[in-house]
Amino acid sequence: MTASSPATIISPGDAIPLEILWQAGQAPVRPSLADLADLVNLVVVVQLLAADDRVAASLEAQPLAGRYPTSQWLAGELVRDRYALHTPHDLPGGVYRLVVGIQRADDSQRLRTPCGMLPWTTCDFTVIKNVEVRP
Image 1 (cartoon, rainbow, N blue to C red):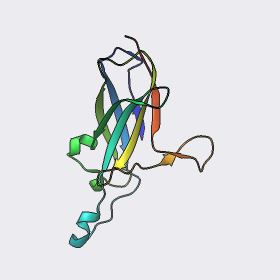
Image 2: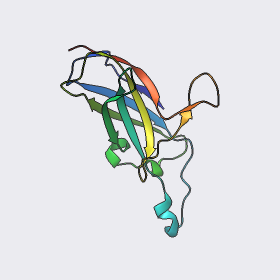
Image 3: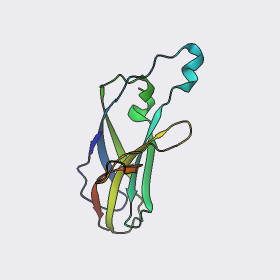
């Protein structure tokens, strides 16, 4: 996954645009009819985190608004998606982290990915960039 946003400085109430380019790691197993319910679809979680890790704004959505579920992606396929994270009108000024995570749609369990300096360290989100809020 790679993600980017042109937002660097915003005002309270602004929407933060975000573009994500996903690459499927492996193709889903072609299930029998009895196994169709076991396919896992994923949900994107976009958040704006304050310095104390408090969630200041959040968005949860299936990639491509659910029109192309992750359970149908093919190995190596690139999928581009866009989001707009709306911020509260009373958002205090300061520097926030724009982060992206992914979770299972059926139970909201966040998936962990490698992060940090050590190879065994995992996180349930990726930091995209810092965004400054100026009232």
